[in-house]
Length: 112
Length: 114
Image 1 (cartoon, rainbow over the protein chains, first blue to last red):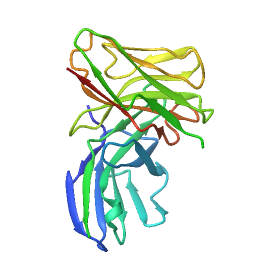
Image 2: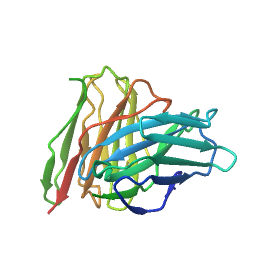
Image 3: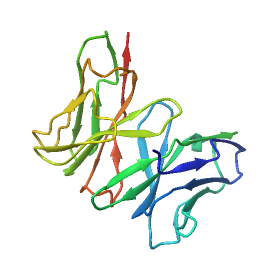
Image 4: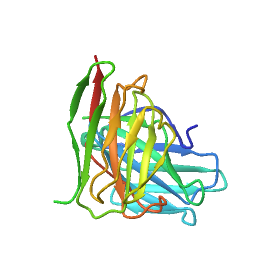
């Protein structure tokens, strides 16, 4: 079963607006990662947040992690048409069942 | 430039045929992975390898086979036993196994069964 579940499934915003995407998961994690995928291309890593971190920034990206609620959010500020893509959260577990599990993704459309 | 190269980008196969997808990396990463992506679904892990000459089944290994004879190469064979092979296949690598760090992905191979 999918560990990470993104919300919403699709998001359409105007250029310049902020985009907020959410991810919920079920079991304990070592880290949570966000990836971006342009149509027909491979995934590109955006940001990784560890279970002992609460917030991380990278350029126009801000990621938060709430382990008590088992949820994370990705905020893209001042969106651009070039941000149009699918965004995936992936949860990493280590140990005997070490694996990185991806959600189904969020389709973001940024209208110029 | 360092990265992961997948080939071919598009592949057509007749039913009953085996096909092999190539994945090569020059990042000197120990771990390599194969994922399958279907429309509207996330990535599902087929096989992964933490070190040369070793590989493990992922969540959907049935109908697939892999080898890891060299550190930089991790080819995936889609056999005739795979009942629904039409999909987008993604190869990835990471510095070490254990999912403590990011994955680096290739550009994918799209397989269509005619």
